[in-house]
Length: 263
Image (tube, rainbow, N blue to C red; front, side, top):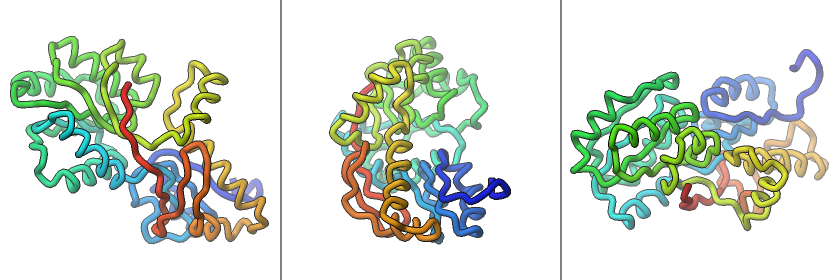
């Protein structure tokens, strides 16, 4: 891309690619706006930013909500991926033993057969009040469908990816009613208009992509040169967009609020 001309900024999605791109952008002094969970994307850097609700904010919301719903013991099924691991670490820290983790299993991103762990869950189901799904798209709907078809009745809950419409469809109805924590939607107007324009599209990260473009445009419209966009973002205060009103938190991240949602 650089060989073809100047790049004002880069927008990226997912932690794994963000971690790969960040040092390249840092070396070239190009602002990176990464729609990614793990702080490893931006930690110790000037030009890289995480533009996703922070794992700490999600954990602050999910543990009290789980307790409110009567979850005292849970099992967790996760994908082995940097963003997922960062989210799980934040949840475990916030949990601090309040909810017993009876079973925790991690799977590589290409896994599609979950019958072995489902059998384990069935043997422990009388001891489990909730089943936390922290699986990536391509796995989430598949797991939910397999679990229900093999007799698992424990309620599902989780983070973020339960908002992916394609996964909800892939689950054949088995994710309906599951609750999860993700970034808020501001006043909801953006999502309403987005669904009207793209009725069959997933809304997962749509607001983040929209606001990332708005923020970079706002920086350039303010007269900031391309090599100082990162300073504009680092000093951001009370910006209003699809995700609500938020500010820079001073650590290359933003104060995006987390809320509880239901599939």
